[in-house]
Length: 598
Image (cartoon, rainbow, N blue to C red; front, side, top):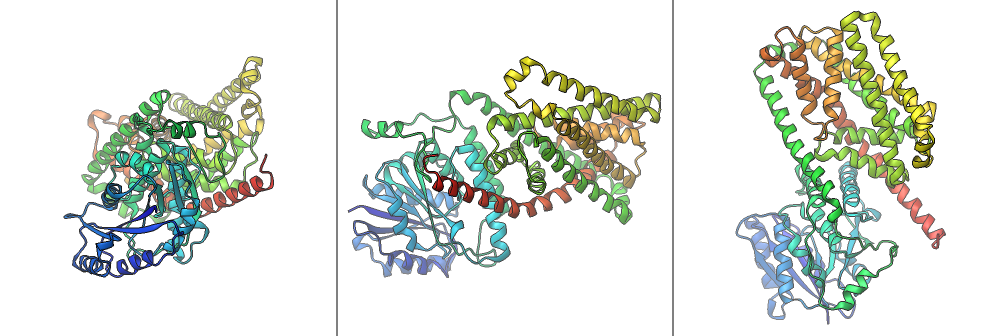
């Protein structure tokens, strides 16, 4: 008879462990299955360790139904799972299966039978429990927790090529041959093990199904251990797994199993997926880009640290900030809010020729992307692209053309303002707007002329309308200019608060330099701040050679004025984005059910 091994990693759960194990043992498994529980105590405090020892007496192992393994030091959930997996594989046969079970009471083991029912006899078969269909309780914490998990799952799906609903689920069920195949790929010690398991499944071409499960989430006060740093770690693990060179895995000994995997239909049943390894020989450029952006993020953090370090040596600047008027501080934040809103409108109007998007949806996803711009490897762009393809149904070609049109019109706006500012400084303020309008018009008309050429239209296959459409073209350029003016307003107010002697034309150049720096391939964080500090110093009387800490303070305050708006609004955007994503997925499922051959 096949055995189901339930691996339970535990750390400081004295009030729930015994009940959790009892719940597992009373589950009525399908008749052909038997059960064994492996508890891995990850160096818990005395109370949990005592409970674990009592369980060995309550479930004596003469029939090998219960096993307790204890770590000498706390290593993390991932390490505990790997220990439990190794112990299970030492005892398991080819027909057995392994399921992960948290040591709290958030998950209901009565879902085991449904998951086993969904587990096929294929060696590379896995089943995930989907928490979001039946979850209850949790209040505001659950809304936040759900939103974050949805975001991580969305990003994971874009990297792995899967289309699952709950990557972070605590219920993961594997056939033993599959676990043998992925265990060498698992290295994460903490909660990063969840996205790493999912990536490993995708890499080896596993078939993956999902089953709705019961879920009663607890909050931090109730003992929840995962925190914001673990969420950031999960993002890093997802990105890192995409960039790893694929390992040559030995196929199964039976040629029949290998052929069965390779010959699977390209459109598997709903909820089941089979994808190629994450990285192929054709992905070397992507790997280089990922490494470049990861290196850029580290360098960006160093630049931010340099700005903060310099700002700490500017007591006069912080004194000026404390004495600043409420109107100046509120204006600083309102400029950031205005920039985010206008940016969302720009994405909306630029897409109108190919997709009639809803304004409010673009505002929410733009707010989230603005927050994620502070993360590594341009995660904001990845999430925006994933949302456009999954929810707004952009094709890959439409998405690239949309982003390209936005980038082009942004460069036109940036060059137009910079040229107008240089004319202002050389010939007077009256030349600013004529030169700005002239350069913007030349850029727009030139782009439109190029897009109407027969050679371009043959290649663009109708997507040239992103440029030839007057509302999209001129609306994008105008909104980009307004966006840059809002950003300049934020820089101007920061300069005013600190009492730095720069005029409005110089302020415009500082702002344009910061945006130009953000276009570099290494990312946004740190480079904009450094550009603000260096450009402001270069335009001052002493120049860069006589650079003072006040310019680093300027960079910190300007960036903080943006972050204090972008991050809270980005967090608020998680719920409506998750809600829209869920509705879109339900609509897609209804369409498939109504037209299964479609």
